[in-house]
Length: 319
Image 1 (cartoon, rainbow, N blue to C red):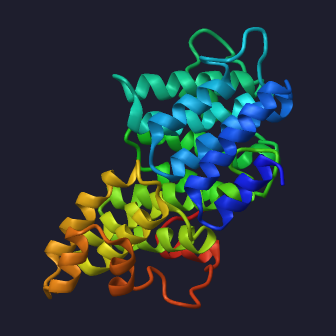
Image 2 (image 1 turned 90 degrees about the vertical axis):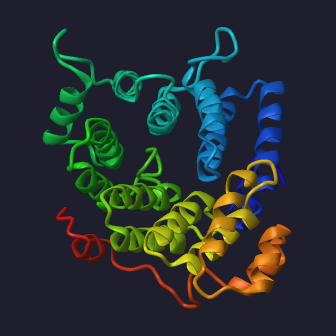
Image 3 (image 1 turned 180 degrees about the vertical axis):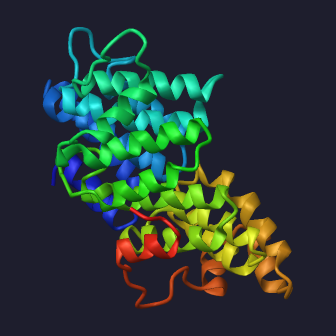
């Protein structure tokens, strides 16, 4: 099979390190053959995968290539929809990886995204925040509704506004569109994870766990959601379940990015109110198979996807 199809199969089966290698092979092949219409979308997909692995710095490097910000081949650029998707994902990464000023850097990135969406400013004084808000209040074409809602949610986040949760909820409920960044099926789990992170930051761990569960039913092999879920569980003093979530994440991650999670897993094991010498030894030895055997699955067998609108309503989000 071709490397890009192999990458998708590896991703779906949870072989994430193999997926990274397959995407890299596909990028090399398409560059050699100058198949640029296939090449640049692969940078976006590899960027998404690094975001799933909780390695936003590497994600930004990939997305920069697709967006034409750095490292693109001279005289060659991605098609506008590809650049648009890369810029929106890059803005999300900048929430955590901005060099100095997240508000400015996220806003600047979303300004480029608006330009790629053919939504120019109406005047010199119209800022990015106003441009996105005005677009959402007008008739957004259904294919881009999820993307515009996510962009608005990002602006709410960098401004510290409460409306971020509703914006991400609207993105979850938006019509599916394979052509957009967050309307495609691949992104549904990402939207739930983003909403869950907002609820965690609001000190609402129960609501966060509801959203993480949705993300993990949709995408069981999702290290970022597993790590975030573990943090939420630790905040609720549920150390053993937190350890199970971290252990599942470590099992899925390539060895080179798992070291970020091991300290969290070991702390969760130490915090368990019912000490278990065998579990402590497995954590100390960094034995993933033993930890998974002792801690069990993250989601109970038969856990199904709940109705999105009902779940949002139960979280106090009216969309």
